[in-house]
Image (cartoon, rainbow, N blue to C red; front, side):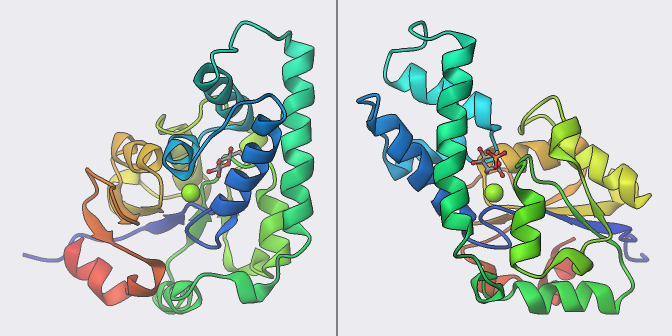
Length: 219
Ligand code: BG6
Ligand code: MG
């Protein structure tokens, strides 16, 4: 049988291209501690792939303070977290691209396949610029126009559409459980990076193990 065709590859950003997932965690932790809410890395797994305001709601629920604040106060808290996060971003350079990612992008490009980005982060543009990776992506889904966080497939479907690719013939790469669910719900082939992730079609523990030949062999 002939191999199934591949029309596009769509990457998540935070935790796949670079370790900004850790910066998001540190920024939330700092903001939450000011409210006497304490979060750890295990809780943080639930925030990966989740939008800024939805993440705040999960943190407030964790501290049992979900009914204590007005929308304006919540917006202020989210802005504070973002200010902490943007401080970390100032340190970001191309050296922070995770191992194996430049080689993976090069191998995909060598086959002439389009590459997309599906990040719900409103800071995605700033991160790509700091990493000098803007040119690598043929289409970046605009988080500001996305109404539903992962695990909803909206952002992956938007990225496929922007690339002119059918989800059924496209590959998504994610480090978050919510992201894997989003890829699967869109009908794409899901590649997971990290431990404790389930339901992916192919899984590696770290980005250094992402090899285009191996992904294609599993596809
Ligand atoms: C996702 C991260 O990529 O972006 C989440 O995994 C983050 O942790 C979300 O909350 C929104 O990011 P931002 O930069 O718009 O606050
Ligand atoms: Mg991620």
